[in-house]
Amino acid sequence: MILLQTLLAFAVALGSLIIVHELGHYWVARLCGVKVLRFSVGMGKVIFSRRFGADQTEWAISILPLGGYVKMLDAREQDIGTIAPADLPREFTRQSVWRRIAIVAAGPLANFLLAILLFAGIYMHGTPEPLPKLGPVAEQSVAYQAGLRGGELVTAVNGEATQTWDDMRWKLTQAAVDHATVKLDVQHPDANSAGGNILDTVNLPLDSITTQDLESDFLAKLGIVIAFSKAKLEKVLPDGAAMKAGLHDGDVITSIDGNPIADGMALIDKVRVSAGQTLHVGGLRNGQDGQNFQLDLVPEAQERDGKVIGQIKAEISFAPEMIVATSPPLAALVKGAQKTWDTSILTLKMLGKMLTGQVSVKNITGPITIADYAGQTARIGVISYLSFIAFISLSLGVMNLLPIPVLDGGFLLYYSVEVLTGRPVSERIWGIAQRAGFGVLMMLMVVAMFNDIVRLIF
Image (cartoon, rainbow, N blue to C red; front, side):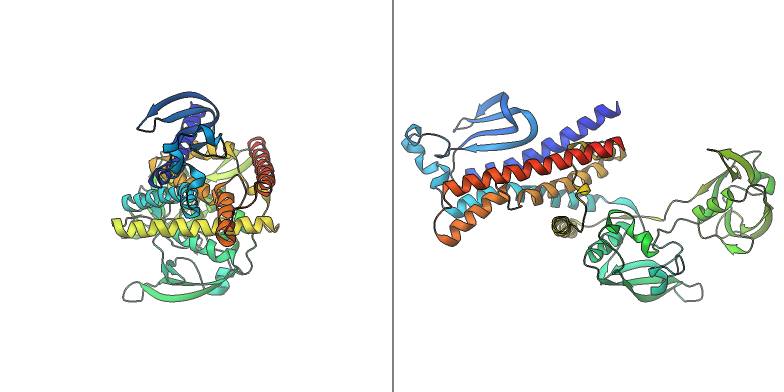
């Protein structure tokens, strides 16, 4: 069932992106007066087709599901003598170079536009996301040396507001690629201040972050972790150590043996390593506004995976604090465009670092990995799935604009030379370039498939 769901999610995502890309070429070709002979989803042999419209354009599904194409009236692909005189002005190569550029560029631009609209829709809808609030900061870490101690709410990175943890992480990722120092505007928790917080600015250096670190949790290397909610006992189970000690549903644990307990995860970690030990627990009865209490708690020993751990038989809350961030339509559209631009630039930077050997080619993924992510995000929910499609759409746009012959970017380079020189590149040179470009593309596909298989096995 999961395999079927994954294949269906992959087919819907890939099919929609191919259709949008090729519709970009199709619409602009029609706008420029070029006759379109076939619109195909898939490559190779046509297995199903129907003809519509005044030009009787063939709308087809082809046997190979990866890709698609728009076939236009083109003198390079058929004998000029077979083209009806009335159709000659609508032949592709007879269009001005600027019209040809517009037709070729329309495909990737359609993918960027789809990404912008999907991101904008997600921003308008809003989704529950963790607040950009920091958990305990390890001593000697970069974040600690910069002045962060944990509990801070990051309100802006380099002057740009951050509503969610993802906002903050994304802005830090962009800065880390350039090894820049970032300015964090934060709110320090302070019970003695009028507003409960102290506003501050922290300069966080990122020069210690390598490109390889970006492939993992680089924030943890800096000493930055997400803040989890207070150590609240959501439910105390019968006959467990928690109930025997006198703990109740809703109690919040604030200290153990005189040491503060920052959050639910810290409580879980402490309990796990304290099997059979007496812990002097301090907390608040029935939540933050309750009465203080002190009691002794002895976690019961339990063997798990060959190790002895402590347990108290209580459901402990450790989810991060969440916020539903929504934006009005115009602001969401602007944020969607900014997200698309920033992600595209970051993708190009990572590709550049890959070419110079600073980033491993293991990061190149193929259809198997994409299908896996499609299935995972579809199972999480519609918003996650749409976000996945948006990222793949802009990635498709970026990849198609690379100056590799056989891709749209290669044709744009070809036509740009024609603009600069006033004459087209010779067919011989272009033929050689296309064969070389096809070889590069095949090599990338082999690397991507190899990486997919390695991920699948290991």
